[in-house]
Length: 501
Ligand code: ADP
Figure (tube, protein in one colour):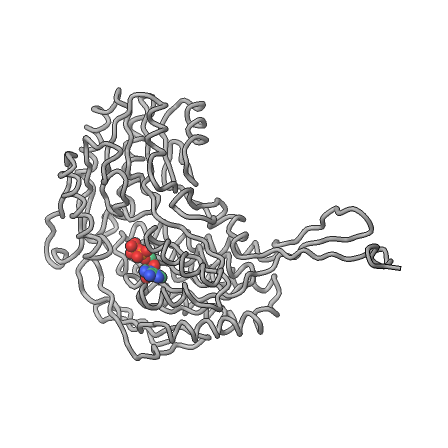
C-alpha cells in the first residue's frame, strides 16, 4: 500500500484498492483533499473514474462467484470480527485521520465515530452465521423451503459527514451476507476509507471482495450507479443526487437503497425538563457541525416556554467552543468544505430575506493563525421562522436551526409533517401518552423521546418520504443485502396430476 505518512504536515498518498492490489487510476490522475480546519493539503489520492469502476466491478464479480462463495458463514463472521479488532487497535490513529479529513472534533471521532465503526463490524460478524431460510407449511405432499442468499456485487456510494461510519454501515451487513463490494467514498473525505481498505486486506478478506475506488461523484459515482453488472446500489447523500442515482440504476433494474436528506422536527413541550431539552436541541443541531442528515433543524417550541427556553438556548449556543478540531475541548470544528460554508452563508441571507431573525451566530467565528483559512461557522439560531419558509423546508446541513413556535398539539403534528423529508424526529415532554401519540403520528423513520442522535448497530435507521428507502443497521439491513429463493420439492413421487397418467 502506498499510503501513510504519520506526520499530517506531509500530504498522505493513496492509490485505488482493486482486487486486493493498490493501483494508480487508469487515467493516471490524482486529486487532493484539504484539511478543512486550515485548508492545507491533507492527501493526494488516485482519482478513479469509469475505467477503474469497471475494473473494480469485474474483480468483485470474480470474487463473488469464486473464492468468496466458498468461504463459510462462520469464516465470514471471523473475518468481520478480526476487522473490528484491527480497527479497534488502530482507533486512536484513525480518529485523528478522520478529524483531519472531515474537520469533526477529535472528541467526536474518538468517542462516537470509531467506537461505532467497531461496534458495527462486531455486530454483523455475529449475524453471518444466523442468516437462515425457513420452511413453509404448504399443503399436500410437498416440501417448501427458502434460501436466503446474497444479492451479489454491491455498489456503495457514501457521503463525507461520517466517512468511516458510513463505510461501516454499508460494508458490514453486505459482507456478513456474503456479497462483494465496490465502495466509492466521497471526494471530500476519501482518506478513512483507504485506511479501512488496508485493514480489510490485513484481516485476510479474499482479493476483490472489497474494492475501494475514490473519485468524483459525477464520474466514478455515476459510473457505479449506472453499471450494468452491479446487483445492488446503496447510496447515502443528498436527496437531489439520490434521485439521480435511483434513475440511472432503474435502467438496469438494479436494486437500490437510499439514505437521503432530512429536516427533522425537534419538539419541546412546556412540561419538558427544559435543561435537558436545551442540551438536546444543541445535540440535535450542533453535533458534527450540523452536518447530519437527521439533525433537529426545525426546533418547535411550545409558546408557553418559548422565551425561557430561547434565553437558555442562546446563551449556551454562544458558548459553544468552535475551533481547532484536534483540541479535545473543542465542541465544533470547521464545516467540511468551502462549498458547504458558502451554502450556509447563503441560507443566512435567505433567512433574513424571508423575515427570520438571527438570534445568535450567523457568521464565521474570529479565529487565529492557520484556522483563519478553515471553513468554520458559528452555532446559529433563526427566530421568527414560519414552517413554510425555505430555511424551514430545505436541508442546510450546517449548525443552523430554525425556531418555530406552536400553540397546540394538532397544529404541531400538521406542521411537523409538512415537509418533503421524513428521516427523524425528536420530542421533549414528561407526558408519556403524548410522546407515544407523537411517535405514531410523525412521518419519520426514527423518533427520539427525551433524547436525540442515539444510534446502535442493532437498531434500524432510515427514512420515510423523500429521506429514502431501506433500513441500515440491525437485522433490517440484512434484508437489503439478501434475496430469498423459494424451493419446492415433491414428496409424493407421483406424476403431476394435470398432465400425468
Ligand atoms: P453532498 O451534497 O452532501 O456533498 P452528495 O449527494 O453530493 O452529497 O454526495 C454523496 C455521495 O454521492 C458522494 O460520494 C458523491 O461523490 C456522490 N455523488 C455525487 N454526485 C453523484 C452522481 N451524479 N452520481 C453518483 N454519485 C454521486
